[in-house]
Amino acid sequence: MKNKLLCLLAVSCFVSTTLPLPAEETTLIVRVRSKDAKFVGTSMGGALVVVRDATTGAILAQGKTSGSTGNTKVIMREPHVRRVPLSDEKAAGFKAVVDIDEPTLVTVEVSGPLAQGQSAVKSTQQLWLLPGKHVLGDGVIVEISGFALDILTPAAHGRLKLTDDGVTIPLRANLVML
Image 1 (cartoon, rainbow, N blue to C red):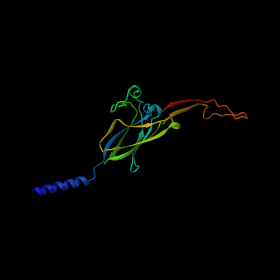
Image 2: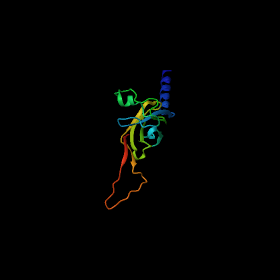
Image 3: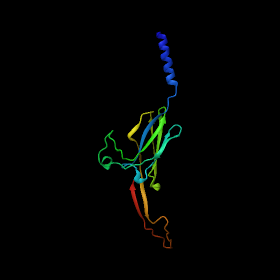
Image 4: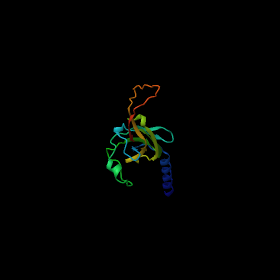
């Protein structure tokens, strides 16, 4: 009897480890934050987010961030404390839902801001996702750096007259950190 029980236990362990597990939905919140500043939200057109399987390159989820730039007091004025969220429910983010059946190394690619195409930058970050182990709250925060530049004058469609004396171009611009 004891041998039969051990044999049955061994067979069940073997079968359970060799059968493929069904894919399980796993949620990942992705937030894009400007270096030493706030989240890239709807006011800047959001940021494009692509979540890829790092091994195969397959796209697991894609979309864009939307929402507010976040709470200025929490993000910019108060000291950051480990495990204390920087985001709230209104802060810009993208909710990716992926189906994975094993621990998966993913690459999160972000590019933006989308409303400032001439100023858009790209950044990536990798992390391991475990089936059913959701990454919520602040989620993964990918940082971008740079400036958003708007040329106010001269207008893009304007004409400049070049003379023998050269040309003086009046330039007005609006420059802000991302």
